Length: 66
Image (cartoon, rainbow, N blue to C red):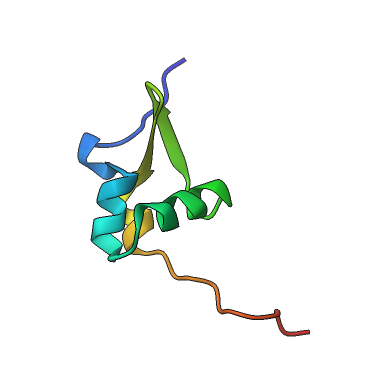
């Protein structure tokens, strides 16, 4: 079974995602670990989708409103 994964330029490394957003690589890794950014695992490397990184909006801090 074949799955379309898009253009090769669509997927970037966590380090590149961090440079793109102006944050640390660890910040991107935390978002991946929490499931906030979808990943593609190839050969032990985790890649994130460029458009997801560019369009990511952080959740507001604090307790959610009731």
